Length: 548
Image (cartoon, rainbow, N blue to C red):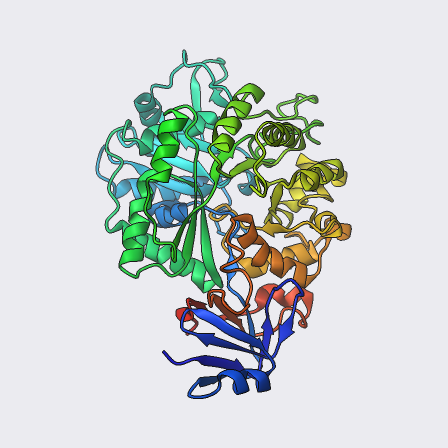
């Protein structure tokens, strides 16, 4: 295979020196070298194919630190209830209209699925109720996943199949919302109550869930969406083990457009930890395309649903309770039990947490693990860490804990965080990236797709500018440089998942995972970074996506 030399453009390497070069040589699947045009031509030019970039910019392919690529695939046949600025469904009636349309073409007894709904996105500012969904269908079970992935909205058929009634107690770490009588479920399931139904559904305990025709095609289409945004490694945070064979088949058939990192979701209430981790270890994955990363856990909910576990009360009292701070998904004792089991098996932990009270518990736990059973360079994660305090950042650095921040909230929800959920002081510090930069800490930034659309350039734009949907600057002191934001979506994300030696930067010997952009984000107007067009994405030096 001919060596390719890309010249007459800009090459942002994201290496340790943040080098910016003139040219890059690619030999087969790997980067052969980077440097000046003259040096690359001299060193690799004999019989090479020389490609004129015509002023375009090359970056390492974006590495997705945290998202849910399998849900992107799954949602392709769900009713889309996304509100602005992502979608157009901004009222309850619009939601119900779309659901009626789907019910009209769904056979009796078959499931009706929907996703993307958020009560913060509709004018009524409330959830979908059982009585409303019963009006859609009294024979079809309805399953509507909230945009945050932390709430469910269901009808009576679904509640009956799941065995949820007036006598069902709230599970630990979750809430079954009730009617005015305080007993009858109203169709809204929060946190662990929602996850319990999802677990029963995917385990086939709620009847025939409907088969997806050609599941590999769904994965193929999802990875193409990621590649079209410049992503060369996608993340499946919270992988269900039953879905991994679909990826294996896709890799074997050459149908994946990105590499995929799995973070299996720890089913701490359904099977024994030993049995589960044995199953994780049993997979034989193609190392070029599929990587078994650390184990995913949950510790709290979301800020916008007021289920994140904060150390101080929410800015607007929740249901009139001025002392309400949210809650953890697990008892601290159960958290340590799960932590210990996973850690002592030598596996990395990645745990979802948005609230600073939750992060106190997690950091305490990580410290205890390492004191009792040291694992150098394990890089245990906190995913999201939106409200992390300065003292907690110091603790994370001292303990070698990796933080993956969630800047899209600043754009999509920042105005509401400031005015409703957190108040101005805490909202100014959402995803405090500059605090990590000042301490020299590697960190990643992510979209949590499908919570927010997979769009690395939008996320980089947000981390750099910190501008909300309504056009307000939120947390100017936490802005970071374009280079720091790029590295958080490339080399640092690869480091997060222990893959920095193979990908994440453009250096000789690493995989030629590349994105070609129409403009240079380092030199363009920072407010225009999100408008830069992705022209081509290459994985292993071969085109995975090319703009028309």
